[in-house]
Length: 359
Image 1 (spheres, rainbow, N blue to C red):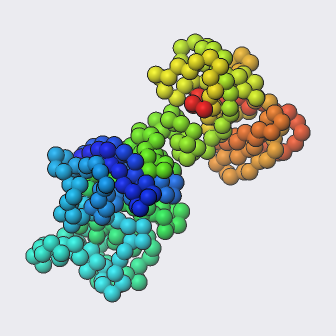
Image 2 (cartoon, rainbow, N blue to C red):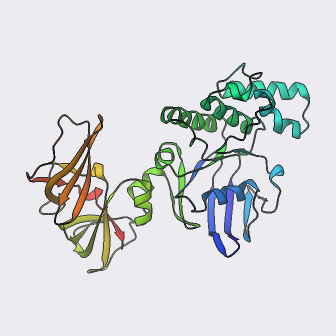
Image 3 (cartoon, rainbow, N blue to C red):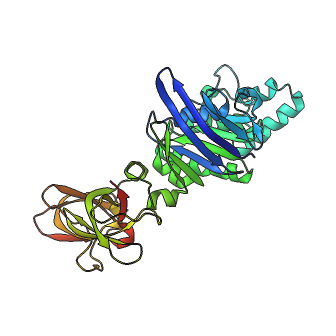
């Protein structure tokens, strides 16, 4: 395993900036995610770590070693691509062994390590198969075995599950995390799938337009987003614009909104917004419920059910509140389903679930 330190990294392609002043520290044995929309720079950053790109400025260190200008083959990383990049004219064993043969290891050691890698990804005895004889999930495991067989300091994964069906993706999330933790690998994983990141990551960096917007553990990023972009990208949420009225006790503020008064907590403990400053409230759909204990007149949202979608484990509602605002509400483990009607209902949210962000 290896700790990675990236300092003041910049990269442009022609006149288009791709990475802007990236500072990032990834610890030994950490499974770290680079998360963001298409074109945000996450794959470009991964390719700098791998050694496929060189920055315009800045440094990359593996522990104490400066690898910024070191070629990819000398960095001792294992790379798993979105397309798997398996050679159809080679057998499974030959695909896995390719990196070992490049390193000119003895043939008996190559055979032993290939069998070890196949066992690791739970595909023992498939070495003689052709790639075309494997399912998509098996091909994905072979690509993982090829990355692991060289015993890398760091495992780099570029959207490795995007070509799999939903059930296989769930299975492989568990498998990749198990392997990384079992062998103490430092892993850097690129994805735009927020569920993948939330379920697998030790920590994550949310990126936009070549910059890092927030670094933190999944729970921290979800519960305390740094801003509107992170709140919106990391999961579904309702945004309500408002203005700060006054503090209302430790760590909470009264906010005036188009839906009435709200009590909210700031997304950071060190932020104290001034009275009358513009803010945005973020309320996750699962934080809203029909019924509960109201905190005075705040965080009560009367309205009418505009739409309901039953999903078995949950129901997704849209509540028409006020003249033009539709609130998304998710009810877990529903016993009944409210149908769209003109009847008035009221949704409630606890203060700790109403997060105040800078406007």
